[in-house]
Length: 132
Image (cartoon, rainbow, N blue to C red; front, side, top):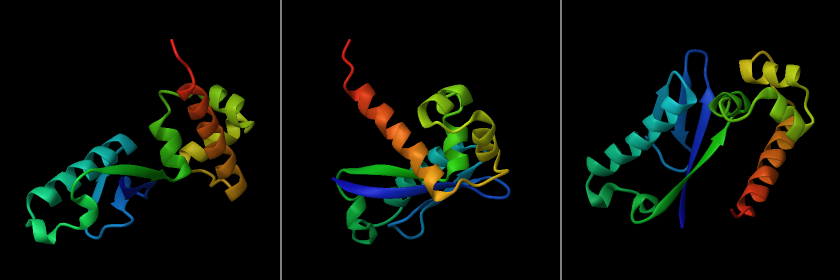
């Protein structure tokens, strides 16, 4: 399946969304949720208002959107799902440090970003193995 890579990141004024492997498709909003909705709508409008010959091959047929977040945006997007306590338990990073990352006060080092990503992927793998 074709992949559309979308980056979500916090800017000074809002959250922006842009496609890494397509030109001219952007979105934004006051929250990560709004930025995601905006970029999805931008893709739909791009496909609707362009001739088929002008639409990149990646958007023809089925494709999947993959989101790449900066740490601040990720923590804010999932704040209703993961408490700082839960994230501390998953990652081993203390809650105060996680709060600094989610507020943008501090940026995590690459090793810390990797630790968060791996912990979330591990949780995802465990959840995929659950059957009720």
